Length: 82
Image 1 (cartoon, rainbow, N blue to C red):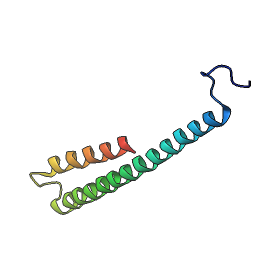
Image 2 (cartoon, rainbow, N blue to C red):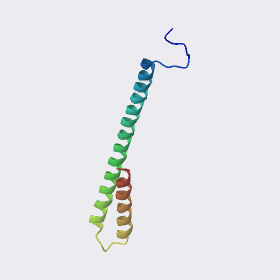
Image 3 (cartoon, helix red, strand yellow):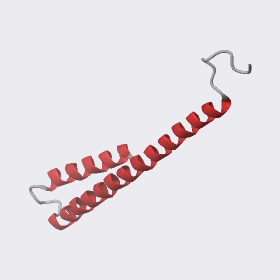
Image 4 (cartoon, rainbow, N blue to C red):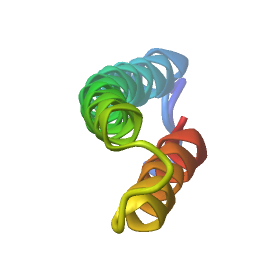
């Protein structure tokens, strides 16, 4: 009579449950990192386009300040998610 109490869980069942949880967490970690890397590449592309516009417009242009603020906002957003 090794198992008189039905509430007891064997060590093998406990280990299998922990491995399933670990596998689930690792899968979610890879998915999240993949989506984050796509978002960061998008932020770098937008920042590069805005920096190019700033360099071609010059400091005397009417929309220079708006382009500069938008580039700073994209850089801060990308940095906060990194």
